[in-house]
Every structure is written in structure tokens, then in C-alpha cells.
Image (cartoon, rainbow, N blue to C red; front, side):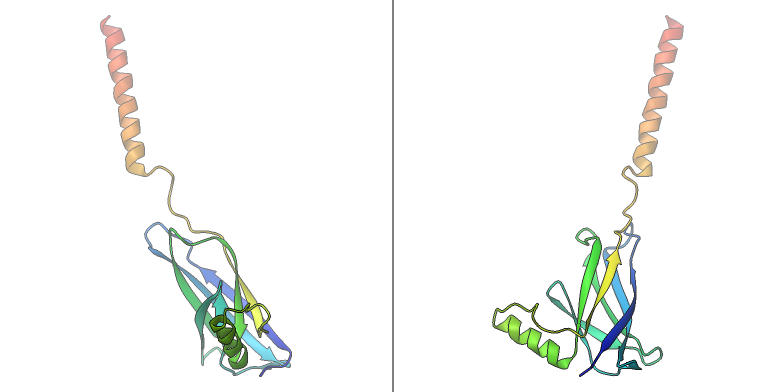
Length: 149
């Protein structure tokens, strides 16, 4: 158990959706209990979906990540609810019993912001080239017709 928990986080998301099929959401955070670095197992939940939390031995940071299909990946803020062993057990029990999980106490909440992924221009370059080519062809034919008349 952690008294006076404090989370500090850094988050990353995939921003280029032109050639990728999935958007990656990654949040790294540090947990301190009473001002001291914590070393406890953690669990996470985003939108009712349970996620694994891993701890890096090198940086002493926790990492949670997940993927969404590019076409279905929403933009905006994601609340990552972080639980310890007791809290996560209470969440699972509430879910099994069909109860509301919002009353279960979290270790903290990390907010991850995803601005949306760039999926390319509205008109691809091949289509733009064809439109320009037809425009030039139309101009050439109409000019030739006017000169011959």
C-alpha cells in the first residue's frame, strides 16, 4: 500500500497514421509514496479496459501502453487509472458483480493527450496530377479549336 501517492508522467503517441495500421499510446510515470520512490506492482485501466504496467529497472519508471486501429483511434485526453494490488482486486470484483468501479480508490490518474494522427492529404498526389493533366488537355484543345476557327 502507498500513502500520499504522487505520479509524474510523460506520454507519447503515434502521430503519423499514413503508413501505420495502429496508433501506439505510451505513458511513462514515476510513483512516489511519502516522497520516496515506490517499488510496488501496479495495474492500469483505460476506458474499462485492463492494461499491464511494467517497471523499468534502469529508470525506475512504470510504463503502460496499448494500441488502437488507426481508423478507430480517438483523439483527446485518456484517463489512465492506476491501481495497486488491493485496488485492482476491488475493480475486478466490482466488474464481476456488475457494480460501478468509480468508487474504487486509485493510486492516481495519469492523463495522456493524443492530438490525432495525420492520415495524409485529402487528395493524394496521383489524383491531383490527373486533374491537372485533364485541365491542361482541356485548355490545349479549346485553344487549338479557337485558333483553327
